[in-house]
Image (cartoon, rainbow, N blue to C red):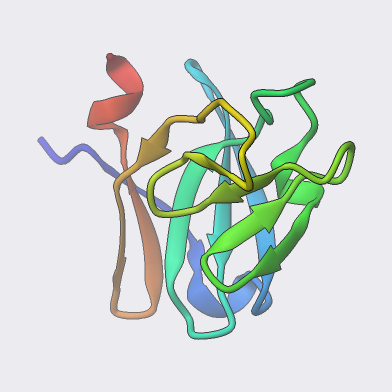
Amino acid sequence: MSNLIDIAALTDIPKRGARVVKTGHGCVAIFRTIGDRVFAIDDACPHKNGSLSEGIVHGNAVTCPLHNWVIDLESGQTQGGEEGSVSTYEITVKDGRILLDTTSLQK
């Protein structure tokens, strides 16, 4: 049985945009960068739980809309001297579709 769920077409998420997927684990934010890389992380900022999917995507990072904390989309680590991190999730783009691996959501 496959642990991949089809989220959307790559083109359904604008460049430098995001979408939220509600799971039993919590909300996961799916981001598309200007270079068409796709990342999945927890949607809640480690600082004050700001919705990262509403933040500004720049390079491979997102800036939280509440207090400007910057989160690296690859590692989930905060940048700029702030301490904290969010979980990251494996994502694949295949045949133009974004697929989220739910295995890590079950941990």
